[in-house]
Length: 577
Image 1 (cartoon, rainbow, N blue to C red):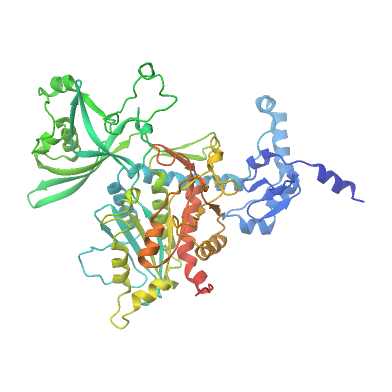
Image 2 (cartoon, rainbow, N blue to C red):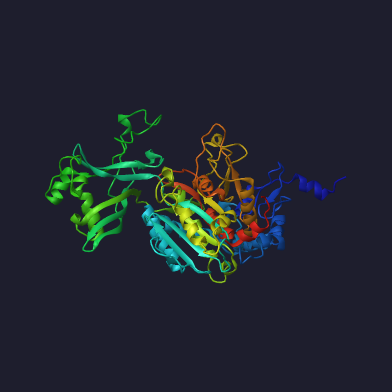
């Protein structure tokens, strides 16, 4: 016959309020009312005192990704709160109005602070990366600060063990690498790949348009954006400009920070059906307004006319107003502008959001999130007292342009760039098969964002594979090779994640749903290298404003740093071929 205590425990129910107190707790998935620790992988009798005791155990502390763990005493916390209520009438009134206070441990506050600080650093990176060229500039700045040396693709390279380097192509793709202190020719490459581009509107090579008294800028759709999200946004331009100088032609980056462009919606009174179905014509409806012709004449004394069809000069191909804004931003003469490649961008900064500041709202999360994770993971793995000096591999990150349009460019993942760089690094006059040996010992993590379960469209997700925010990066699988993950490459990543205490999730798309792809299959087939596809879960992918969670930044950086730190030892314990 069960004891009275066990009978009472069986009658207890789980409370979701505990998730506000302990970040690691959730309801057990076995249908019972037990609490479940996501760190220790165990069930707990659903009582607050039991959760408190578990939180303070040595086993749990070892699993907690914090340096400063503190004891948590639920009774003491409640006594302190009650003492405050007794001596402070305002606190008593507040407690009565709010009900029982949420108890937040020092460990929880510290964890939230760690995650939010990582997220804020990522937000700065996103706001800098308004075009692929600005992404490369932001990466270079961080790499130089971390002691990486720049190499030119046209020069001869003499790389040394325990040294760090980077190179760029087209100033929209960057490859950075750190040579292990124990590296020898023929050893492997530990690689992480991502992409620097995102769906956007780009200024056409002849963009001047004048319609109904408005000065407009012709744009081209780049990638598979959700184009209706670009309506009614405060837009600007950013990219690179080629400028004529006394010594030749130089590249300059430009970012006009003021909102100078807008694509206004047509009023609902003129299209009553728009809430039932709205699909803009990408050629005629997605043309942003720059100014009115009459205001241009009042401001400059010149009235623009004609179109750019027969234009031969830059001042005829594009609106003079736009060229003047660009030249003013760069401090050059309009006549010295040879050409440019400009992306439209939202002027609203990225931000932390949600009632508890747990979300990231911003543009270009796909795939700057992965770029930042790869970059920071590499940098942090190479810091002083790190593991680079004992590494037998070369650690590599490859951040490519043009993934959103198929990667088929000189700077894309489908080019020969990766192979050329790896061959240069493995070259050895005493070992003619060093590259081939290295590839067999190498591994690539293809990092691109994943689709989180959407609460309003749950039927779009496979019922057993539903990635959620805050539950870690996602391993991506597809039997038709839209993703390159295999059971072997996934096992490698799971072991790395286990060693650095980062949770992982799995995803496959439904059979009645199309599946996207990444640079993973391209590089796996081109190089013959083992690849795993991963990504952090997000919502609103390819919208002008996307959404993910703050914890994903910390998880991604920690996981990719762990990959660089641990892959050689994980690989040495793996037997397949």
